[in-house]
Length: 524
Image (cartoon, rainbow, N blue to C red):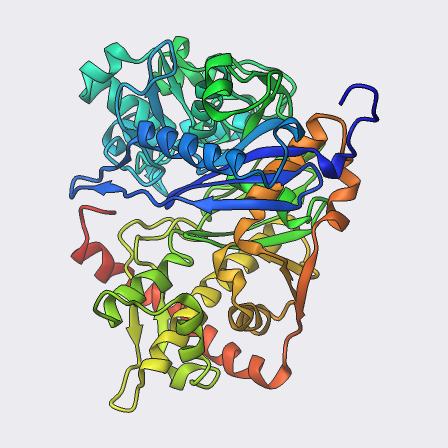
C-alpha cells in the first residue's frame, strides 16, 4: 500500500486460533474484534480407565494449517491486511516436544490424572488431601498448588518423566497448548506467567519476575531445563517462520502474539475486564471469573487468582468439569440415529417444560467436580423422576442443573471477592441459547448480559489482546468493543421455584459424598 495511508485498526486482521478440548476454532478477526470468518474442526479425546485423557497435538497443527489456508485463500480478508497470529487454548495441559517444536508424545489434557500418585508424593497429606506445610509453601508463593489428582502440568510432567521414559528422553520442552502452537508458527519456545498459571511454578507475588520460582521447582521435582523461557504476557514471540508463512499464504512480517489460556481470552472476549466485572462461561466446562486486584486463594473450594491481562489485576480462576458438555451427553443418551437434534432443537424441547422441570433435579457432576468442591469421584444424575416426567422435563432439568451448579460456584466466588456481582456477561456455546441465559438470570438472581456471538468469544478475545499488544486497542475500550445481543433480567415468580430447588442442590451433594466414594474409589 505504498503511497497510501495505513489501514485503520478495524481493517487489520488477526489469524486467531481457539484450541478447545473439542478441537480448534480458526478465524480471521479484526483488531477490534469483528469476526470475518471462522471454522471449527472437531478432534477426539483418547481416554482409558487408568485416567488417561490425551489428544494428538500434531493433528491440531495439521487441522489449524488446513483451516488457516482455507480462510486466507477465501479472500474474505486481503492477505496484506493480516498482521498477527494470536492463540488461546485449554490450559493445564502438557505437550512434550523436541527442539524443533514437534510433538514426541501425545498431549496430556487437563483431565489426565495418571500422575496423581506422583503429585501426591510431593504435596499430599491429611488436610483436604494436602500436606499443610507443602500447601502453605505453594499458596504463599504462587497462589495455588499442584492438584493431588495429577490433572495439571506438574502431575503430567512427573508422569512422563517417571512412567514414559522414551517420551521423556525425546522431550526438549514441556509446553502448554498455546505455547506449542506459538512454537509451531515461530520455532521459538516461550511461555508467559499467564500461560504457565496452571503449573503453579512462578512467584505470582511478583508477576514481573520472568523466572520460575526455585523453591517451587525443587518442591515439584520437575526438570526446570525443560520448561520454556518466560517472557511478558502480552508480548510478541516472533515472526511467522518463512516456510510456514509460504505454506499458509501469509505475507512476510506477520507476528505471533504470546498466547493466553481460555480464561484470559474469555475475559477480553466478554468485555468484562475491569475489577469485579464478572463473566460466566457455559462451554464444555464452566467457570465464573472476574478481574481482582489482590492475590488470594481458597484451597478448599479450588478458587485462586492467576496473573491477568491488565497490570495490577489478577483473574479469579476456578472450573466446573461439566457445563455445556452435559447437554451434549444428554443428546447422545436420549436420541438415536444419524440425525441427532441440534442444540437449538434441544432447547426448543426444553421450552415445553415449565420452570423447575416438574421438580426434576439434575446434578451435572458427570466427570466429577473441581469447584466449589474438589471431588473427582462425584457423579451426576437425574433425581425425583416420576411416571409423569417427560422428555422435555429431562432436557430442561439439564439446563437448570448446570445453572444450579454455577450458582453454587458463583456464591463461593462472591464470598471470595468480598462482594456480590452486578450484571454478569455470558459467553460460550451454551450462551447462544436465550432460554439458557434466562434460566441463569433466574437461578443466579443476576442480570445476564448475553454477549453477541458468544460461541466465538475466545476468538474475539484473542484478537483484541493482539490489538492491545500491537498498541492499536486500549484496555479501557474493551467493555464497549464487545457487543451485547440481549439482556436477561430475573423474574421474581420464577426465582421462587428455583430457590426452592437450589436449596436441595448442595444438600444432595453432601448426602451422597459417601456413596460416591464407595462406588468410585478409583476416582477419588
